[in-house]
Length: 566
Image (cartoon, rainbow, N blue to C red):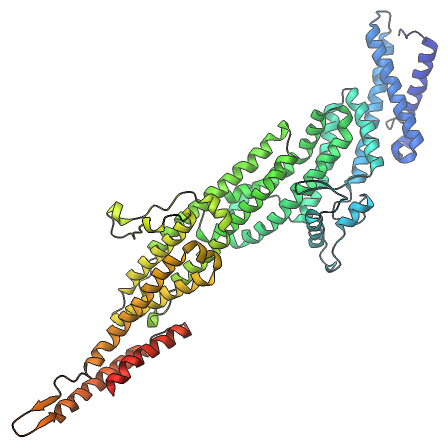
């Protein structure tokens, strides 16, 4: 083989380098198999790296010279030496990675910087009985911390996943492997080891390996708790785990180009990121129903909050798919929420129960709907952004008398969400009017409407957010309706009784005497007593849950009945 200008010097350098490489050939030496160079001492590691550099230079010079006199055997010998060196560096690279990846973010013994580790220490108020739960709390504390020990962009908190010495060693090895054409091996090995570390963190965060089909087959009650856990875990994953992995890739591979550190980052986190977001995707494409709305909104809000961080962490072109997946899930969650609200309206309108509620009391549907829209008002800010068009209403336009109607002109200036909530109340009242017709006693029908509309009014008044959206004008309209129902109830109940106490027909006049006819009076009292007993028997079954309303009605009836009786 032809040597460059100073053949003796280069030959000696190559031979010395070759001896160092061969001394650490694990296929030829038991001692080399049992020891790791970078664990032995820094000087030995430096010597080995210098030896690799020397072999690479020698190989480069041989290639440049392209001298036909160069020995094929020598060329093969150099190639063999570099392959042995790369195999050894692969082992060293893997060992350093594994040694420094064995402790997860949840392990107090992990080799973070002292300041970063302090930020991850669990709160003194938390017991040590549940290490997984404690670990989650640690990361949540870190996620919400404003400590200057973290590099911060938006809500991102990057922690040091490895000590600086390990990073320097990995950087040195990666540079030599990549310059020798071992880029793919380096990336695959790095991704494989770091993925295991992420998997460990996922397990402690409670993130399960479930397919979209697996998730959709779960009962909703089970999914609710998983959604709560996912929201907490997703914040930790994006803002800490993935962000810190990205920073680690940058530190190790910064010397060989951003394309390579992006490639290593995606090799590491793409699978876990897809696994993480598949859960939200499964929820977003599941069949919607009213009870799912609020958890879907929770997911939507969490993902909306995370989107800027997702875009910051997955900023490179190679991670487009993750950003696109997150944005598409967010869009589907919004559409799912709109679909559920539309279905909720239909559920109220078509609620089929025909058996009258005993005593004209508050119907379960009324409680359900008003509790539901009170919860909707808690998500006001989100739903104002999602509900962009007013509800489609009106038998006036459709000619369908089985549907309610609402005039929007008098509600001008209200948001589409406010109009939707008012429309839901209109639909509820329409259904209640239909249910009131199943009472044989007209007074109970009026009492039923009074009780239910009064309950609606009280629920609106009891929620500042709901009251603000519904507005005092419509609230006064509802109040007038239940007072009208109360008046109708009193008339239907007591008018016939009060009629027995009228003066007409009791007086007689003649040529010899005039005055009250005793027989007519006796008959009138007999009729009064009979009718009063009948009313008492019926009204004894009536139910007015609200104490104040019950007292107001009692006073109103007394004011009409007692003076007439006297």
